[in-house]
Amino acid sequence: MELAWPAIIENLLVMSVGIADTAMVGRLGAASLAAVDISNRLIMFALAVFSAILIGTTAVVARSIGAEDRATANQALRQALIMVATIALPLIIPGTIFARKCIEFMMVMQETPDIEVVSLGAQYMQITVPFMLFALVMMTINSCLRGAGDTRTPMVVTGVSNVVNIIGNYLLIYGIGPFPAMGVAGAAWSTNIARMIGAVLVIRAVYRGHGRLSLNIKERFRIDTDIMKRILRVGFPAAIEQGLMRSAQLIYGMIVASMDTVSIAAHAVALTAESISFMPGAGFSLAATTLVGQNMGANNPEQAERSGYQSGYMATLVMSAMGVLFFAFPRFFVGLFSKDPAVVDLAAKCLRLVAISQPALAWVQTLGGGLRGVGDTRWVMAITVVGFWGVRISLAYVLAISAGLGLLGAWIAMVVDLFVRSVLLVLRFRQGGWKELEV
Image (cartoon, rainbow, N blue to C red):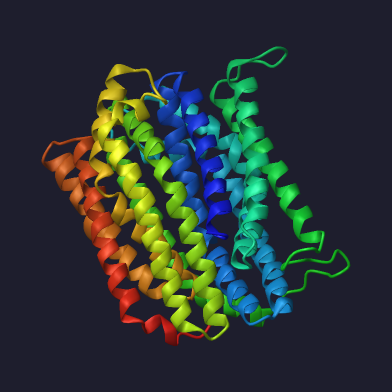
């Protein structure tokens, strides 16, 4: 709980800004909501490239702190920042220039793409992509801090960043006082400002030198190939996993984008409403990542195993309660983000469907986090491939397109995928082969 509660609060803050974004952009209309949703899916797909660095570094930091080797943990943070900057800078320019082409690609399965959605989505990407390095720096340092057992600093930084984002949305989307009404562009600029402030705060935190991770401004950033190899040995399978998962989510999103604008908007609204349940799962997942990794670093595999199971039990309890609320009051939750009757009706049906999968999602998040923390990324990758490609994509196409169930068919496929992956992750964790891994 000591590790999980700040992470839960942090995810609550992340969720709150997602809710605020969706609610504020949703008032501009279904086209604006669909545009931002499609743009963010593309950005999340691009971020999968960096998962090798983030997951690999978190595992190395957790092991090093468990073994009381702070020097290696600090060096891992430096190498992670070098790799993130090296990869990010060449990707930003084409991502900005070809933003419109990317949005059109996402809607290629739609017979006649909505021109307004394409234009607004391209505008959002062209504004946010050039500032993605700030988001990546914040993500990298926060991941390392969590691996070191410091979940409070990321909570505070995320809280400040999200407050800035919400205020910026209010001022720039609608135009308050001297600020112009910028619509979707306003949402993009408020996101950029929030990310810049968050990056500055988290950099300041590690250079103050008071925590388990601390950098010295006098020390130069030199490439350390040994540390990089350790990071990538764990992170490379994780990157493949994230790439395959994001690719599947992209295709899944294209299946949804082939439907009408109401379905796209309802999908975004239902996902945002469901994200309320992500915060405890993500919090206990981070606790599992840290505790399983640190206990393995301290050569205590039995305690590592108990940590993983306990995280799963606690997440299941909380998320099952959320599932009951989703099932009983779906229109209340989706009604927070849209007032369009057609969008609310369809989104409520989707939320009631996914409510039954909350216990499965709890185990997917916690045991997936625990296995990544110990470096067992190959098995997580294999299970992700089975769930997303073997179940979600194929079943979504059959049910949503071939069987004509539309958005409901796509969400049924999501629910089945979560149950399949939860069973496979439990089986892998119980088998215990991860205890023999070297990081």
